[in-house]
Image (cartoon, rainbow over all chains, first blue to last red):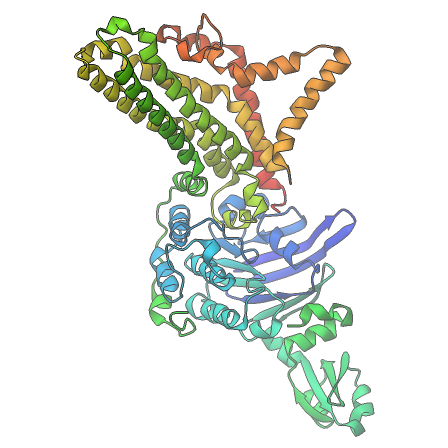
Length: 289
Length: 306
């Protein structure tokens, strides 16, 4: 079953093209990382999928057009659009009451169990919670909703590493199963790459890489080359080259690992390094942690 | 952290998903408005407290400085006036709070970005605006009733006790004040006012959903600009008359008042429900107001939320 299917998805703001006719297909039961520098079109793509913004081209989310069928879509889709959008005046108990009162798929007992594991108290107001606790609260609410698609747009922005790690561990352990689909965007690529099943690089409204994580490991290889082999390695046409401790680190696509291993140490590149290689130096800050 | 939350608790993940349960999105949406805007009921209660305090002081002065010998010593209007004034003051407090509420109803959620949370819930934009519109049009009249009824009751009991203390018949006072007729009039006045002000609240909702900043100025400057333009260009002031009629004409439309504008002395006999629902301006107001609310729904649904 397909969770999301986009064909020729396009969105412009005046002359600025945020999405330049992208094609994307996400199957159910996947965890997709959508990675790109600021202004690459990540949030625009997610907003289109959530029915928050109009678009050109065709886009189907769980079999529905998100722009015209948003109301029914929201029963099956849940999202954390940005950090700190929970209303600051609300009490934690009110947030639980409200979601239980409006969402038919909300499991109150699960939310209370998740919150009991945190330091959040039910009678606190959101404004009294730390940024990390607000995110924990939002995640507890969202994870207690039996949604088929969960969209997380920079859910851990501005949080310290302890909360970030807990966030993704909790998501994987207490929420994810094969009937759900998760799409997540983040700047902290290295923290989520171990939980992803699929990855998409996006820059300037275009998709530069769309691959399953297994295929990334098969297709791309990173070679730490010894100086005497540098010329031979360069002849194999690396897609990117950088220097680490005076040694060349070359990134190859579709080059046999056996061939490379004769020239130095071969390993699978990290998503961050692959991102820098593919999206390029200009977008470097977008991939940095 | 009170407990390490990265330890995997199998009991939570193993819990089978709860079957879809019944929801009451309208009820909970209205409740959440009351959670956020506590002034909606605090202001009428405070107004009632002020009225009650003033009334108690006046009653104690009355019993100290006047020697009441018979009901005829007092104009029955003097005894009735505080009840009317109390109702009008609480209504006014509620009305002003409802105006400010409406101006923020669709703006505050965009300013603090919480609209992205509300829109992640399966509550349609139509239902959201409907629940918000219910605040000035249904909930506020109910709050005013809920505050004025007990207030009037306490005032009535106090007056009767003062009368009894002076050896006068409390029952004579009761029949002269006719509380049933008074409260009927209050209910009628609240219902007609809510209908009359539909276009005013609709306009505030539209501005609230449309303006990115300074909603208050966007709410009042365009109507004033229209009046000024008409005055200068044509030398007439139809628009000003129309707006003035809408803002201050609720009682005139609902009551056959021999003295227009003196709300305190409107009598029960002046209630004119048939005349009210037969008025063209009442129906035009409803239609225009509904169009404003509809436009507010459209904006919340189809415009980029932030």
